[in-house]
Image (tube, rainbow, N blue to C red; front, side, top):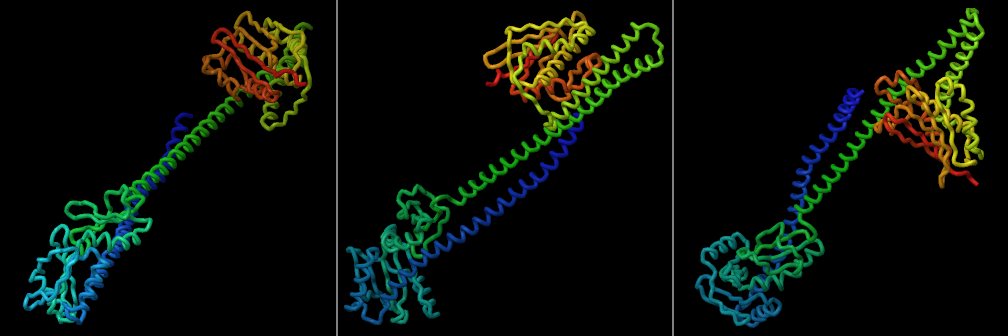
Length: 509
């Protein structure tokens, strides 16, 4: 049976392990692809947001350039009004200056916050702007002057590219005043957006001061602020954190699934083992019962044939043969009754007739019916009761059947010589105990927990050949006691005998 179970277990393990292994490999390979795809989608989305912020800064600068690129005198009142309007609404603008490209002369200069302007646009960049202008494209160039100053410059269309407009900007103020409202609008409650210095890494602006998010997952150079970087990340978690969380969640799911499958596999193997053990016990039961039935049938057939042929010369011998036929018939009837009772119990067809019975009277009556059987087996059976009356709510015939089973077992497994059975009636606080004790071979501790199982018989040594049985008696007793609301227990020591205890609940009112 062990090899069969091992083979079945191996097949089941392969059947279960292959799909799980395939699923695990597929899941982990798909996981990296999915995370890469999510990373790409997320990066694309972030790039679009970064583009939106940069586009807004470009729109602001172009709006300034369009306000200043007017067909008016650079030093006149109209231009002065336009310039001071820009100063008033934009504290980041430090100075505005108009230069004549051919003569390199200053046509007009306007200052904000007492700023001193002494920087000129590089000549090579101005030549490039002229080339763009000839292609009908007005380009705005940017140059970092120092940590606190940034220069925007472009060629004006109204002077046909012969005039340069120069704006000096405080980049930090530009971010805080001009760009922050748009950044906040883009960020909403989903993103954390920050602007940091490219060299030092110091953050000059963030959508949330106490966000606790020091690093942005995506960073990009700002178009008009080359010394600064715009960073963005999800407010809740980064893509890496989300990927890690998903991986852990999937791993736990897979682990839970594997545990459930393994437990299911163990349960199936346990059931197969149990069924195979039961099938083995049933096969052994059929063999034992067949042998046990064959013996009394053979004796009855042989002795009856002898009597019919009138080969016996004395009446004493005839009486001996008739007694043997009667005993073997009773034995055969007992075997058949056990099998029938077991079958009825299996199908819940036994009908109990409960009534108030006095166990102090019923036990002696049962022993009286077994007197000849006990005498033939040379067993000294004694009954002792602590009380004169022990009322229990039970089926008297079923109780007798249980006691007969226990006495029969005590005879089978009793001592080889001087067999003795003690039956005691004890009254406890909540139950009435009927103890059946023998002085036989006893039961080993490892077998005690199985003796009440169906078809189970102790077969160590030559015990199976010495004591015949079906393995149903004690199981019937256990089931019948359960139907009575009671229980049966065992005390036994190997080589010193066994005591079976029927525990009946006290009489119901």
